[in-house]
Image (tube, rainbow, N blue to C red; front, side, top):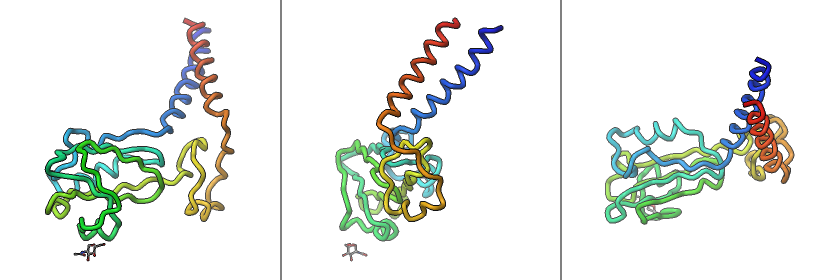
Length: 181
Ligand SMILES: *[C@@H]1O[C@H](CO)[C@@H](O)[C@H](O)[C@H]1NC(C)=O
């Protein structure tokens, strides 16, 4: 009985610590199937997938496709809207493309295969700005954020020791739980 009373706060702490780890960079397998980057079965499939997920700076997405017949083009918003493949920002052709979302704001991707973008093979990813990060695990704020700084709560001071502290905390939790068992 006494042990159970101690165990519950410990478990709560463990849960809290694992939530912190979830705010670290994640890798998203686009579409959840392989190959994923191909003509969608319905035109809004890709935007539905994008809306189900929350992307943060440092996360990455992985797109798989047949490198012989398709490619991924990162384009401007204008080219995205008009499906203009002629002058991409970046182009990826290796069939298994990992793209790191290294800034906040929208990213636009379209298929390089003839006519595919027009049939809905296009993807807009909105990367949340650093202030959406929990617990201040964020890189330096971009100019866009400093702009609305007065609206947002002050970010936690960046501290080099926070990773270590989290490590020590989870270590202590495990020890506490083991001691009770
Ligand atoms: C596509 O983009 C290129 C370069 O940005 C531009 O020169 C061309 O006119 C555009 N084509 C169409 C059809 O809009």
